[in-house]
Structures are given as C-alpha cells and as structure tokens.
Image (cartoon, rainbow, N blue to C red; front, side, top):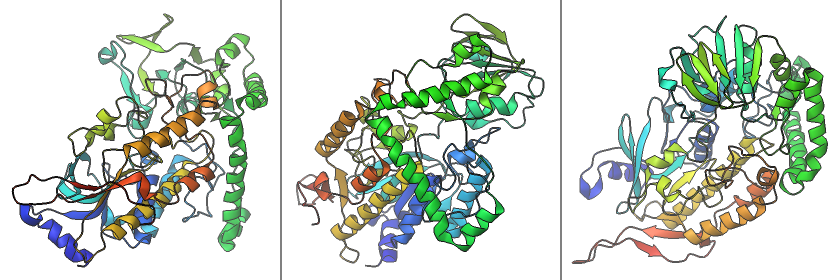
Length: 531
C-alpha cells in the first residue's frame, strides 16, 4: 500500500465511515520549532504533513513580539538553523524584523507554504486508542494524524498577573507580546511592569517619547553590555562567496558558549568575577547611589537570565523615569499602586511579565487514551523523556519540551537536537509498521523511562546556578522545581537525542477484535533497542 493509498483509506474513516482528512504528521506552530520540524520531515521523505498555525503568518514568538526595540540576545549566526545559514545578517545581534524575515525565507526556500495552514488554531487533541491516531480539532475543522509534533514554544502565551482593580483602569493596557501599535505613547504617563528581557529593550526605546515612565521592579536583573555592531559589507560578501566562513563563525560562537556552561552548571562561584563586571556596568551609567542600590541584584549572576543592553541603565537615569523597587499590587482608577504603597497616576500600563512557561496552555488541550489531559498529568510538574515525549501520550512529541531551555546559548541548537530525535522516531515507526503491510503501531514513552530521565536531570540541576543562585526565576514552577532549563552543554543534549532508544518505549498495536471479547489495546511489553 502506498502512502497515497493509505491516506485515502484513512480519509474514508475505515469502518467508522468518517470522511475527513488524515495526515501522517500534524505539526502545531510555525516558529523555529515548527518550521524546523517541517524541513526535517521533508528531508526524511515525509511529505504527508501539515503545519497548523493559529496566526496569520509564520514566525512564532518573532512574529508576536514586535514591541519597540525587540531584538535577540544571541548572536545572529548562532541564532539560525545550521542547515539554513544566512550570510546577510546585518548586525551581530539581529532585531525582530530581520529574524521574522529569516523565518519567512526558510518557509519559502524549503517549499513549506503548501503544508502551512494559517489562521488554524488547535482547540483539542484526543488520542483514538482503536485507530492509533490523534483526532485534531481546529478552528477550521477536524483532521486525524498518526503523529503530532507540538512546537508551540514556551514563549507563545503571555502571562498577565491577577491585579485587583485592573479591570477598572480607564487607560490603555497591553502585554509586550501583544503590542498595540495604534496607541500613541507620545507624552503619555506610562507604567512598565516587569524587568525581564522585553522590558530592558522597551524602556530605552520609548523613554524619549513618553511624558513620564515609571518602572515597577520586583527584582532587578543583571545587565551586561551588548557587544552589538553592524556586520560590514566585506564580511557579508565573504560569507556569501565562501560559505564555510559562515559555519566557522557559527562554530566559534558555539564553542565559546559551550566553555561557559561549566560555570553555570557546576561551579557557580566562578561567576563572581562576571558579577563585578556587571556592577561596573551599573556604576558607569548610574551615578545616583540610591538608584544604583535599587538596580543592584542580591542574587548570584546567572540565576536569572543575564540580560544584554547598552541603553537600559542610561534610560533609567533620565529625569522623566522613576524606578519603583516593588511590584504592582493594585489599580485604583487611573492610579497604579505598588506593593510598597507607592502610588502613580498613569495613562497606560505595559506588562512585560513573561509567558506561561511551566504551565504550557497546549497541555490543557491534549487528551490521552484514558481521558486525562497532559496538564492534569503534569499537575506536580512538567516532565518528559529527553524533553520530547510524555508518558501516557503515544505518538505525541514536543519541540522545546520540559528541561530543554538554555541560560546562556542558542535555543536553535536544542531545537535541531530534538529534530534529530523526531527523525529517528519516525524511522522507528516505519520499521514497526512498514508501508504496504497494513500494520499500525504507536510508540508510548514508558513511565519508568520518563521518571529515570527526570531524576537524572533534577539531580544534575541541584548544583547549578539556577537552583543555588538565590533567586526566584521563571525557570521554576509553582513547586520551586526547575522544569525549564537543561543542566548541561548543548553537545551533551545532542548526544542524548541522537537516536530513539526503543527500550524506553512500549509499542502499542491496534486492539484485537476477538469475537465476544472487549476491545483491548495490545502492548508489547519490551522491545530491544535496534529491533
């Protein structure tokens, strides 16, 4: 049976008479993870797939975050796919528009447009234990898929704090990831809530045009100088003419960050020297001792992501900027009230309060064979096998899953490692159910394998700066467990995800249909690696 014949049979719904579309793979999201998955599937010879995107364009977080000053804090040549190098990056650290252009170019270069369905939001995914496929409900109808790849990303759904009285505010309110470009900030009194990566870019970008800017800071970040510059025409010409120079540049950037990892993961005390450099960075721009004290963190550098900016501190020193060393606690009409009692009247509130990272919303929409959602399964904390597959959810894979985040390097490196894992996952499924035989099979991560992997990860996490640095970061879930960061090098993760170990999975077959017997999924209890 050919792939086309198999698809036609499934579209007819077999004996159930369901005439709806079926695909081999459904990818959710069209950011770096989703587009990367699509490219890898095509390279594996799999063309029977769709990319479901809820927005009207590809790009993921780089489409959504269009706030003033938005840029990447990872060098451009490292923050791009190894299989799609860009010799024409204009700056060492690229802005949002250039990264979005790059992703659009990837979609075109690798002929992904015909697979992408824009304005199609996934509302629910439910596993069919009889057919061994996922029912994928979307805003544009329902389809089925043998495998689902969730590439929604951890920075996709903005997180707004529950502030008493916010609904009574008469001015403008929006999140940094949902910037209102129609709202004119000129001359306005603006409250900026939060001091993360978005806020330190927004503050200097809007400081000159607003009437007054009040920054509400629960915890000051460590900010280092941003070594950004324009990439010369000569450099770009060289990269175009000699492509290996682009790869060499990427390799050097990668190697430097690999060497730095040891300080973050094994020897946090070595970061003290970096801390001193960061303090000098504050002192150079902030002469007022009181303000300098507000802006100096009390936790070990690296515990939260180290931010990069040459303009943040100078902007805070301007006469039209106030720094409130306390979080927002209440809104009374047009007055915002900090936890320390400070009251400020404002015309607009901008939230730079991050995203749902440790409670990914997509998990609420994924329903396993027992009727339990992934979010319910993760009620005590997210965990998965090698950051990719969760126990109880066959043929469901996550790109940028639990404990795959980085604190000092490029997430594209981690994404590409997970794409290697996806490619081998698809190969194993093909071996278990070769086309033409009419066989069906699914892979389900063993709970014991998931637990063993996460025990190992959390044991390594204990001595890292993210757990010992004395901060409360967005890397930690509500139980104080770091379910976000990978406690090792990117090369270690690549080695761990190079191939699927079938001993860590159960192979699920379609239920038997013996006369008089109830339908029961047949599970092969153990499959040796390489079988």
